[in-house]
Amino acid sequence: MKYSNEFIFQLLDLSNLLEVQPDLEQGLREVVCLSAQILKTQRCSIMLLSEPETQGNGCGYLRVFTHYGNLPASAYEQITPLNEGIAGYVAATGKPLLIED
Image (cartoon, rainbow, N blue to C red; front, side, top):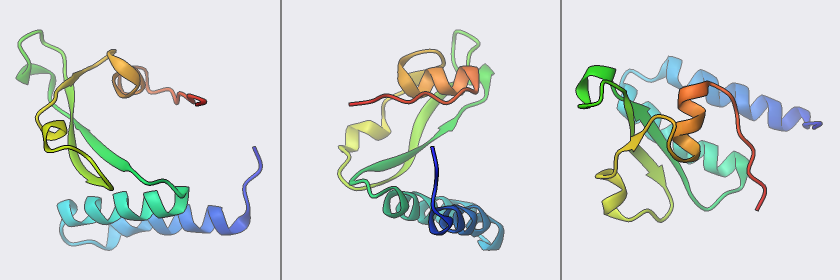
């Protein structure tokens, strides 16, 4: 894939955003909004990984922390175990996964 210089500079600006934010939570909220704008998507979310010992099976899990666009309130209550679903697979393996629709 070839990316334009503008796209690369937007990603660099996005990565620098957290460095200048005094509040991590607010920084992540801004990151999700800017990510959606850069990627030209209607919805975007950031999921955070728990510590492994907080789940009964000894594995960590993902939970939605913040979002952009439409997302039902119930999404904040859902727990995604590692290796389950797209996000769980990516978090467990550390490898990107492209799903073409």
